[in-house]
Image (tube, rainbow, N blue to C red; front, side, top):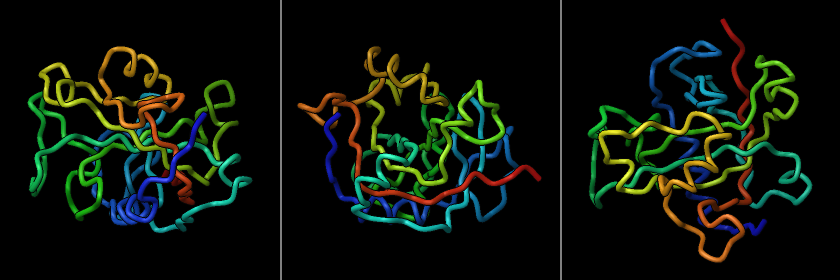
Length: 188
C-alpha cells in the first residue's frame, strides 16, 4: 500500500473543527462536544477534542485504526449547509470552515460491537484516510452514504468514489501520516 502525505496539517485542522453532526440512532449518545461517525452501518459519537499528531511515527501509523474522511465535491465558494438531491446532509456540513468542509467519517471498528464484529480491531488512535465521492454519485437521487468500511471496495468498483491518488495501490484513497486520538464515547 502506497502512502502519501497530503496536507496533513490542513486535514488535521479540519477534523479538529468538525463539531457538527447528524442526529440519528447511535451506538453512543451524542453531545454538543462530539462528532458523529459511521461504523458497521450504525452511528457512533467520538470525542473531537483529543490529540492530533501530524507526521506520526511508522510504529504509531501501523497500530492506528483507519478513519475514512469521505469528502463531498462542492462548487468553489459554496457556503453554508449542503443538502444533496437525495435529501442527505453530510455529517460535517460546512461549518465550521475546514479544508474538507463537507464530509462524512467512517470507522473500521468500534467497541461495543462484539469481537465477531470489529471491536477487537478498534483503537482510539485513528489514521486519517482521505476519500471523495464522485460528483455523479453524490448528486444523484439514489445517493446513499457509505456507513461501513466493508462497503468501500464495492463503492470503488461501482464508480461511487473519485480517483484521487493515481498510481497508488488503491487510487481512491490517500493514507496520510496524520493520527487522531478520538475515543468512541461510551453509551449514556
